[in-house]
Structures are given as C-alpha cells and as structure tokens.
Image 1 (spheres, helix red, strand yellow):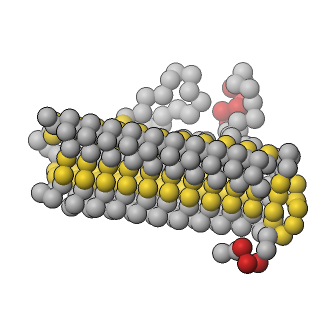
Image 2 (cartoon, rainbow, N blue to C red):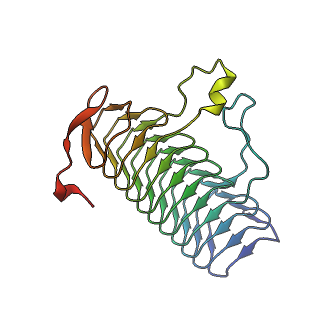
Length: 243
C-alpha cells in the first residue's frame, strides 16, 4: 500500500512500486518510475523519464547536529531533479539540492543540501557529496569517494574511487576554523587518481592529472602530472590525453 498526498501532482504515466510515500506538493513528470519503499519529501520536483530505485529517500529535510561545522542558513528550497535522472537504490538526496538532466546518482550515494550537480554527471556507488558543493557537466565521481563541503568540481572532471577531499586545517578546538573552511577547486578536465587526498583550499588547474595515492598539498599548474606524498611535478600531460 502506498501513501500519495492529495496535493501531489503525478502524471498519469508515473509508475509507483509498493509501500512508497509521496508527500504534499510533490510534482512528478511523465514516464517516471518509482520503486518500492521510496520516500519523496514535500515539494520535490521530478523531471520526465526519471527512475528512482527501491529504498531511496529524496528531498529529505536536513537536520544537522548542534556541533556540525556547516550550519543551515535560512529556508531550504525543495529538491529539484531534472529529466532522465537515475537515482539508485537506498540513495539519500536532501532538500535544497538541484540535479541536472541525464545524471546518475548510484546506489547508496548521499547528496546533501545546497548542492548543485550539472548534466550528464555520474555520482558513483557509495559516494558522499556534502553541503555547498558545485559539480559541473559531464563530471564523473567513482565509488566511495568523499566530496567535502565547499568543494567545486568543474566540467569534465574525473574523480577515481576512494578519493578524499578535505576543507578544514584545524583540529576542531577553535572558533577560528569556521571562517577558514574551504574545499578543493578542481578545474575543467582535471583527473584525480584512486585513493588520493586533496588538502583544504587546494586548486587543481585545468587538465591536471593527479596520480593514484597522491597527497596534494599545493596548487598545481595546468596540464601537469603530479604524484607522490606530498605530490610533486613529474611532467606535462601528453597532448594526446588532453580534452
């Protein structure tokens, strides 16, 4: 048995599985498929041809802990999912996110509030995307990566599995840290190898290639390959490997 609030607007072509909940003022477009035990929270907008797999929670209202570093500022707008979006099983996507068309949010991924994700993006299985993150078009984030708050990933960026971004150089004992939180800025076409770590506030310039397992402690130059702990310049990226 499902619960669909009378104020929700569902096109007649929408398919809803078993034991799902659609709250008030939700708007769902044409040819949308909703799996079993899905919860769609108040005000969420879902574009045409979108698929939401079993157990997903979309439009969840955020409720950070009193000790959370990132605080809520004012009212949070409803979640917007574009057309042809795929939301995997047991994903959680919060209210205040905006996700473009033809994007995949894979199984078990989490997307927090105040996040903008572009078109033709892949957010892999088990990826966490924290608050105030911007992700450009055709960017790929592979399984189990962590994209911390206040990070920017521009268009055509590639993030390999298990990459960690960071935004805080303090150990959490001083109020000073709140004014200095800053995530990475990964520019167009940059690629980050598996299990690499990017320190707070680091800029990876266009078409940077970070080798697997690197610890990036300094800004990079465009079209350079860096590797090691800490990461250091190795050579220029081969012209054949550029966008």
